[in-house]
Image (cartoon, rainbow over all chains, first blue to last red; front, side, top):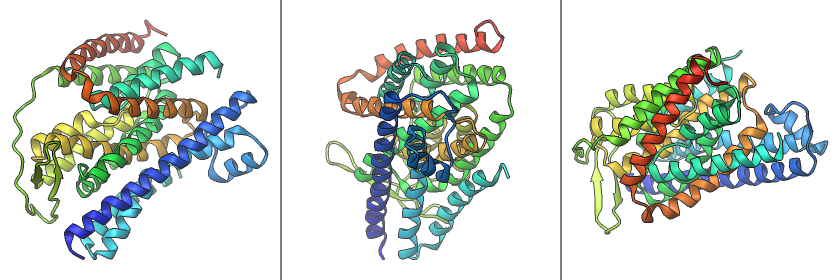
Length: 115
Length: 276
């Protein structure tokens, strides 16, 4: 795949990844805040993990919706990097494949750092 | 969180997104002092919420700049390696650091930012297009007058080292790191101003990501606070990008620099325990 075509595809994939993440997370955050305003609770407000958030949503708690929105938002730049990785793999640009993998490795390190 | 406090925070967040978008800064520079000095949140909690807001700003604006072709995604990813590593290191330092020391460091960063905004721009020399070193980071975009600008990237190793510093600043203090990244790209790497700002907008999301994960792992992200701030910043940034062509950037920068110096003094007062 020639460079110009790969660049055009890179822009398109990253744009869709960022925009998709933005709309999903924003919708969840606004919905969660609206639900919280309607039925405020006084418990802990620390962001829940993905499974806890889903359980919390099933129990009708707004904190689960807000937590999921924040987790989606935090994950959005990562989805952008994964989209870039897929373009580099298709174009066989191995040096940039390594670059994208290195960024993902740092994110993984951040997840594992607390142990 | 009381409704009135939530409304106050959302107003500050909208202002942060608006000014951040008009001045090319992340909103963290307004959000962290507002949350600590006005609403009394501890530094770490304010930084955690601010990092989430930085990601919201980046995701919102970068999707536009990437579509326009102004963000150099390849360069953003290469610098993203060291800037996210810096964000991780900065966040790890911050979670173990006394909040008064963080307030003092934040004050210093505000003074540096004010200086950066007041001083005249140094001359930039744009690097000619073509591979430089092992990676070809050549990129191009269309100016408003339709003219196409093609440029290459030089001094990659030096740029990556500079981005590491920008990343540490981000994770440590909850800001985007653009104040470091933009001059690094312009003055060291030969990237044109417009492309440097747009690429920085893309990078700050990757930078804040590593820091935000650490804050999340340590239970330092208050979901309600982060949600209110992120939504406010997002709408502020959207309004800012619409207003940008009608606002006198230089005048706004000078006024904002004075505000930053005043806020820096307040942060120093907090650091020595004079302010709550």
